[in-house]
Amino acid sequence: MFYLFHGEDEFSRMEAIRSLKQRMGEDPAVADLNTTVLDGRKITLAELQHACDAIPFMAEQRLVIVEGLLSTLSARGRHQDEDKPAEQRSEELDELLTYLPRLPSTTRLVFVEDRSISRTHPVHKLALELDCGYVKEFVLPQESALHSWITERVKRYGGQITPQAARELAAFVGNDLRLLDNEIAKLVAYTGSERPIGVDDVHLMVSYAQEANVFHMVDALGRRDGRTAMRLLHQLLNDQSPLALLGMIVRQFRILVQVKELDERGMRASEIASELKLQKFVVDKGLRQAQNFSMAQLRTVYEKLVETDVAIKTGQLDAALALDLLVAGVSRR
Image 1: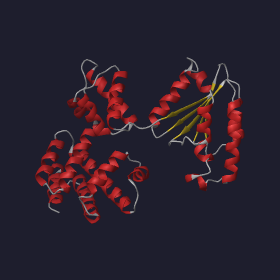
Image 2: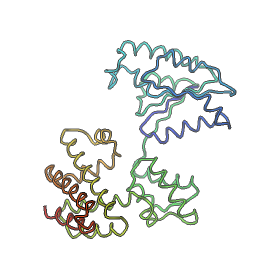
Image 3: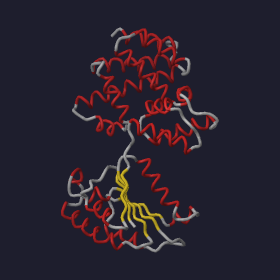
């Protein structure tokens, strides 16, 4: 049987693959011996067939995972510049389509693609036509679907969460499911499954809550609202050391400089997120926030932040006083 697992939700894809591996038997060592992972951008069809035709060792099945092969064999799109010419890739795709119906019954072949594959792709179409084919698209949940995902994930850990807390958690972390899963596990452990997770628990336990408050403070600086920025600064200082807080502020302004520069080059938000290895919701917020500053202002603020860091670490200024002066100075720019 062969599977097509495709889409941007890497976390859920990996869970599905882990589930397939668990079905191979109770002994993890035997499952590992019967699992082969291949780089589809480099392997030949002969190597793939050799892996699939191998006999399972002390088990009824073997699992072959090949990553990125279908995108690589496509003669269109971003893979035009691959080492293999389009004609060769087309021939190998035809060979693959001929081989898949003859796949040994003892082999589970999984095609893994980190982006959605069109229903017109020959392997996608074949998987839908054959009884031995299976297709699953993994799409990152958005808005209400994300809130539902959080609620169900909390239940899986044996806990409960209020709708308001689920929305707050989604707002802080976004749809990075791996990070969300980590935070949910931490929240369930904190509440001990004795009561539903509430908004206050999210604010207390989720590290992103502090970053969100830094974001709001930078928003106030962008509006030149010194009073609000100073109030938020001192709220943050109640929970963070001055140096740790300065590091978070530096990171936020570094993001603003980077996203504004790439935006001015004409890059889309999704491209910026990929380039900077940031979550898209962070880039979206950064783009909106960067509109409050010119590039010259952002660079000046960033340079001032670096100077403040040096002044604190060399003992020239008290850390809390240095942050007060910094916020006051930026508010007046």
